[in-house]
Length: 165
Image (cartoon, rainbow, N blue to C red; front, top):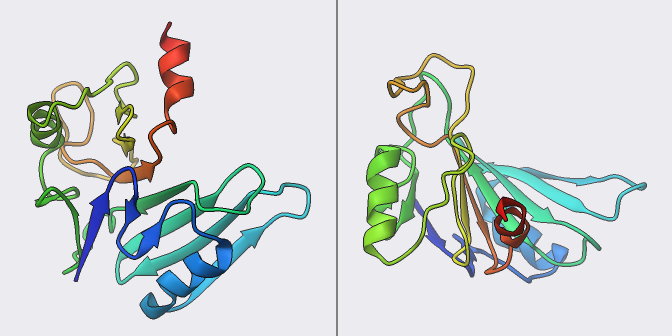
């Protein structure tokens, strides 16, 4: 099974801008899920997994539509037959530098101002390169592979671009 990233529209069966009920219906075939719904915060998160890939579907702000989908690698020593694909590259098994090089070749800009959390503004994709687990690392200490990927809409990372100033 593949989960295809389609920035800035969605990831797998989950589309940005859909309602909570539509997002729950989209992930239900994967199995059990929870909706984190804090009565003091209107935001909501659907927490689920497709086999070993953890998935968080975020309904931020007013909590009425999906604003982002974040997927997490299986973890140290765990394998999966689920691939998370970005233009044919498996996000969690392709070295991060190769992913970023491919993004630049597509005409995208990779913002590396925060080495552990690079992102592609306008597309919008964000990557995590942080873990306390024992994994292969680059000479500067970052994991060789990304540990998470987030798909948001075109403006999801605008605040980070403005803060770079």
